[in-house]
Length: 159
Image 1 (cartoon, one colour):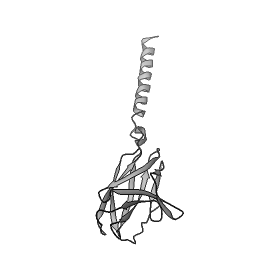
Image 2 (tube, helix red, strand yellow):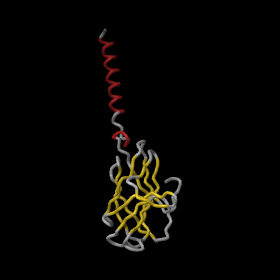
Image 3 (spheres, rainbow, N blue to C red):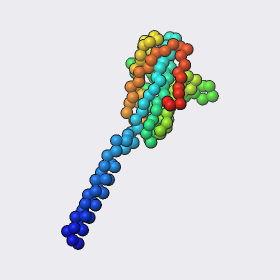
Image 4 (cartoon, rainbow, N blue to C red):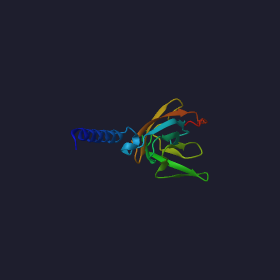
C-alpha cells in the first residue's frame, strides 16, 4: 500500500467515524428515550364547594415514544385522581396513554383530572398549579386558569 492510499483510507475512516458520532448526538428527545410533553388550554371550572374540582387540558407528545400520565400532584389537594369516562360513567384509572406524536385530551364529559378534598376554594381569575407525572417524560408543571363554572374550552384542530 502506498502512502497516498493509506492517507485516503485513513481519511475515509475518520470521516465515517465523525459522521457516526454526529448522528449519535441528536438533540431529538427520543434519543434519550424521554418524550417531551407540552400542555395547552389548561383550566379548572370554579369549584361549587371544597369537596372536589375537575381539571381539563390537552397534553401533546411530539416524540416517537408513547408515554403514560401516571400521577397528578399539587398544593390544592392531596388526592388528585386520573379519571376516564366510559359509557357516561367516570372511574379512576392508574394511568392514561399519551400516544407517540399524538395527544391526550382531558375535557368535560370525557377523560379528566379530579382534585378531591380541596384545601381551599379558588375563585374565577385565580391560578392553580399542578404537576403532571409521566412514566417516561419529565414532570410538567401546569398552571390551571380558574374559569366560570359554565366555561367550555374551544379546542382547535391544531392542538
